[in-house]
Image (cartoon, rainbow, N blue to C red):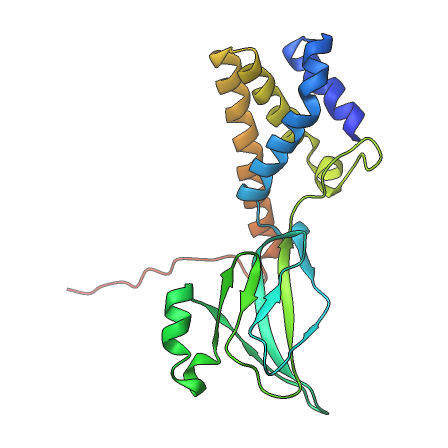
Length: 210
């Protein structure tokens, strides 16, 4: 579905077609997208950023503008056989502490004001960043994204919930907000199943002889 079809469906659910509501739907869409970006961290959002070459005198590097959460970050040393090491997140205060030990501190990173902070890098190193991309915002020109194509009900029920709040109808809001959250949960569950590799998990009970 595209943006226009999503709006049409949401209006039909709440049975409202007035101009007052139409004027605020773009704002409601941004609210819904903000909630989606907070709740969802699934494979469909995962992208690998352009590799970031590091300066030995710089420890702060900007995050991508569509950054919605970290999936994996590695420091890779350039060469015939590139060697990578995965960094582990710590809070800013802890990073300062571990950086006092140069060999141990090189295994960590933190996030500060939309920037990655790492210990001082070595020569010929770069960051390889895999992150969760925020859902591309819907507009009249860019009227679809992967979520409207695969799970349009997420937008529809999210908009319906905001329309209920706008109308100060707690029952309508609660009903559609529940359906909105259910779609987010189902997407997350489906993602976990899709990512699973190997045989199904089984519990083995050993017989105990008394």
